[in-house]
Image (cartoon, rainbow, N blue to C red):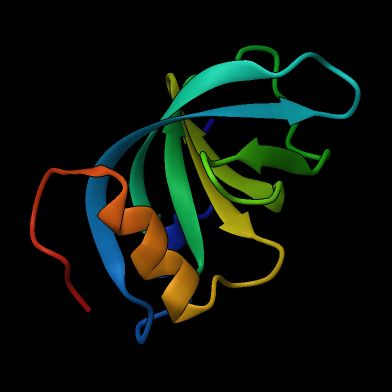
Length: 109
């Protein structure tokens, strides 16, 4: 099932980074599980694999050295989920996350 892609949302001014970052995610009262965050913008992110997810439930994500962030799952393809933050990341928070991650490509606008 494919839902609206984050790239189609009107976040053209948001910074985007191709990176790899291990973090934890959960929905509701389910246990925290390790996921790989592969792409990040101020508006959202892409993660690889959250089994038994529900499109209707908010997603909580723990990125190392940050508070828990809330997001909504906007689309999924196979084992990949595209998520939109409930509140966009401040540019300083975005840059802090990028500095602590493995970068797969150049930082872009």
